[in-house]
Image 1: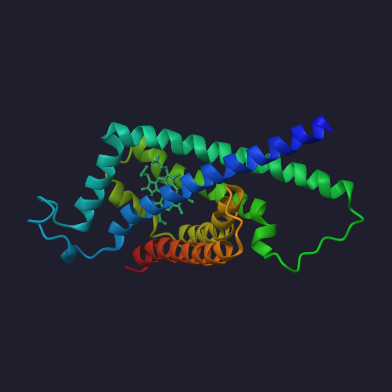
Image 2: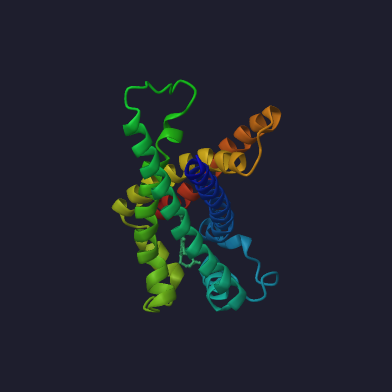
Length: 229
Ligand code: HEM
């Protein structure tokens, strides 16, 4: 009995950790999106007097990236982000393995899936696709610019990368998976952290749906616009 209670406590704790790390990653994604939208803002939107000498998309994007890498408080947040991604993925793996074992134990009980969505049942698969995407994505930009320093002009690197058709397809797969993952993840994280009242859940579902769609659409248009420009 006490070991069962222990297991329950561990699984609740694991879900809470997933919720907090997931929401932190979602917050990063909003900031990351805002910065990368510079890539599709026309040059005419950068009046030289306003931005203090930064007069075009190219210089603005590089100035923004330079600031991110060289401002030490942001470096601390970046390390917290890497830790959050690793913890989130590790906990997700443990929860998936435990659920798989529980399902195998009662394989004769038919599961009712009529009230759940396909993406909520496949968060593990969506998460794995996003994980592969993040590894490739960080290899393309973060590793070359931030770690190795072999590509000092990040704007040129991003634009050259998004001129390749296979990259656009890879990004669309990653970003669409991310959109669905966010729709369920944002709702589920709030439930794990204690939002249970019916009217709140209704609003939450709506907000999570809008958030996932808006994030996916805005992220997706960046590589598409650069490819066709
Ligand atoms: C499609 C538009 C995107 C563009 C143009 C883009 C661009 C970049 C660039 C240039 C970097 C390296 C410089 C830096 O560290 O800030 C970077 C880092 C990163 N990106 Fe993206 N990204 C995009 C989408 C995404 C998505 C959808 C995710 C998550 C699923 C993501 C996750 C990350 C992470 C985790 C880092 C490392 C952050 C850090 O070190 O501070 N990015 N991205």
